[in-house]
Length: 239
Image (cartoon, rainbow, N blue to C red):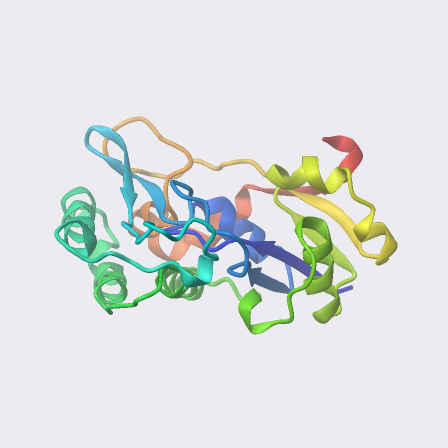
């Protein structure tokens, strides 16, 4: 059985992103679809002394309403990347594994990637490697793309020889209304992840933070923490 998952590239993804990646043979970064402004594609959450804080990458958007994720350009300036680096340092410098991992993350942020997806995927690749996720990974823009929504996902899955597709729960509604996977004889199921707790800075535990929150605080135990939240996949009928 060959298992595939497909997700849009995300800035500093949360634990569930890597849990999904860790549950499949091949993970596809879906960078070939339309960019959604003010989405996780360009922002994510970290924990600060004041609670949850959002970090957002500024991007060029004037006159680019229908641009694909792979085409979105970063707007460099006072806000990015310096401010992101300063905020991360201010809030995580006392974390046990900050010094071990922050320099590599900062090097990626300062690398000067022109395109948003090039940067966010580079960060996700680094996080996957340092956490220990071994699934194969590929960008949709390096593959043949045809159709939309479920038909596009099936088309990508077929190119990878998938017999099983694990979807994030958020895609249930539009996938449940399609018979594309059934016609392709690909088993469709949904990822089930229960957010685990782990040691954090600054008081009571906050779930759904970026995976850097996990990495900086527990370091080599990150993959074990992520896997502790994995549950058996769910069929469409269970949602």
